[in-house]
Length: 263
Image 1 (cartoon, rainbow, N blue to C red):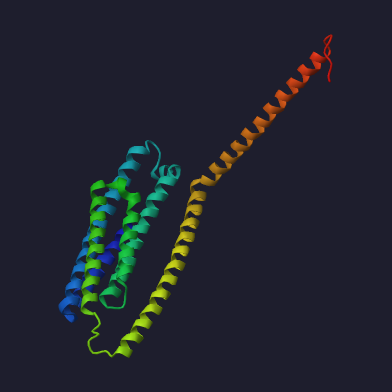
Image 2: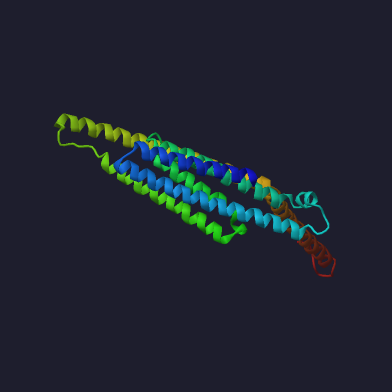
């Protein structure tokens, strides 16, 4: 938790530094967009700070209230799955904050992609899901703040794109045709890339599910279910075979009666 708090504090300080630099060198629409994006990032850092603080308090209360006569170390050892999950979620939030600030820095300097910043915001929202139990109110703040970052980024992207709209009025017919063909080529390339990335994302999610299943013991449960199914099939065969034997014995008994043959 301490490492997460430090990472969030560092991220917040970097955002303030970026905001000061942007105000010093940027003007017009770019400065307005940068200020809006960085302000929403600052709000998100504040919300994350509240969430992490609430998680620390919850962790302390659970340990003190649940350990009884056991030591803190013994409690953590006995409840390793819970503690590891909490620590893992905390690390993910701290890492997400750092990555998001890196993405915001590139966007502000005009070297990054707005989409990367949006993805980082969504990742932070996903990481905080494991910490929701710490403070529902704080988690709502994080959700609202991440939505604010995404909204600010989308709005800023639209504004930047509007100012960068190409002027076709001075182009000749040949130039326009060439640009049109180039645009068609880019569309095909992007569509092919999109398809590959979708397949890659599908495989990554599949692998993530498999690894998560192993960690949570799903694989053992599936094996137990398969063994249960096999046992059920075997039991059915045994019952059916036993019924056939009973019918055969009955038939043999009947053939011994007077007037009844086996034909």
